[in-house]
Length: 413
Image (tube, rainbow, N blue to C red; front, side, top):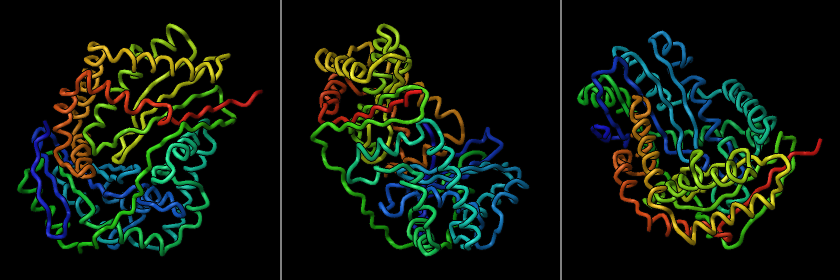
């Protein structure tokens, strides 16, 4: 259980303070409810580009990193389809340096063509290295486009293609900032060696006068129910053949998400899981095989993926997986297997609450899900999931009409 206090400033900024007197530092975590799902098909990669632009200088601070380093702090950030998260850690006595840095860039970036060009090049280079020139780097470009036809989850956070990043204009960047980087679309979490009273006082001091932004009207399209199996075959310069099969499932804002998550654990988490034991150990068709969920806020995907043994054929691999799933649907989950999956999930959750930064980010993510206390509810939710719940979920989503399969072939030498 993570203990915290919550308030809302007059400009709409959510503020959470999680005191931990045993710590010598304070984490300053600012999450904005904007990710690649808020982009339009003709301007993708903006949320991720903006993550980089937020380090290119703000109205009163030309260099973000220099004052933070002098204060003994460190920082980082990440972008997801659902939100963008910025975090820093500083010695408790230097907390105001961190708040000064974060509040100034929320107040306004120092928009200039040079900063945009520098960060554009960084993102383009990342696109090339991680997605274009990396084996299997384009898997999620292809798989997302296969599984989603309407929702903006159909492209990854890096964007659809380099061209859209190359063509990003200053007016587009300004509009993106003014729409989403506003206090009423953000949460500030202070965690560590700070009292609730001091945290609220400093939050108001540094963020309270930032103007409230306009109400955001989100245009996320609802993904229609998939009624027919989809298939894609890809050939590329990769070491071995890879197999991917995804099923649409509830999003993380829905309580049934946790049932689908446990279902994926039963199917393919760890070496004792159903798929791994059957198709890697007992009947070695794959060299590795796993099942997992993407964890997105809106309806997401349960994924089965693995690398094929040399000589194994895609048709045989999918047939074996389908037979195991059919048998699973017929006989249902074993109580012991569900208990094991629960124990693994509970252990992972507990481990995620050990680190101070993880606690801060977990609290911030509750804001993204419109339920600040979600991280404290998750154990109870998982503990209440029954065998019947798993079986109902399996029969609901593990249908061929709900599946998209991609066979990623290695080019012959």
